[in-house]
Length: 235
Image: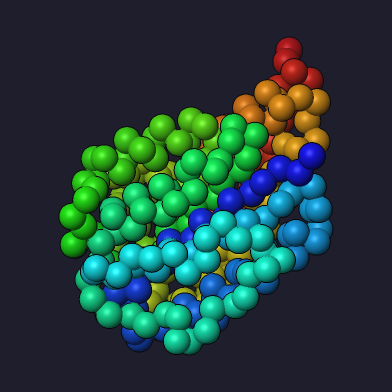
């Protein structure tokens, strides 16, 4: 039986992203290619993709829990920056778009990318989002936050995300950000494959929860700890 992996990518589409539109679009499509390679490398994982661009009144699903085998790259006309930054509403919308489909045996990787802080949400507060994220991390959902023009680590902490990274909003900085995100995603898929091989679903679930509650997603691979079979590592 395959383990489903929900890749939820929440991407800022506010006006300030227009200066890096090309880099953002290219980086996202390269990330889709990384997910395709992971599907081939780890056939026991069923890779599903959801993409949520967000700006002002325009929060939407471009891809909705689609198998990576069926996902097409984003076209330039599908990503058009403009408007403000309803970050909290976008996170809440994205989570709700997949939540009912996720079981305790599935894996979820939520990636949030923004070049500015929250400034226009109407439905969700930061406190509400923090509570939701805290609840879902305890179920093994992995959340990551990538931000420019802010202290991304501090901002992420306000909504209970401990895996965060800053990036410089220019051509070189944006390309470097996507490259590091892809390396981290590849390691996540590798670690998740190890979880799938554990002796029981309960052990796999515990390992995913430990990963989600850790803060080393963006660390270099040699600094990361692999998921452990707790039964085999007890003193």
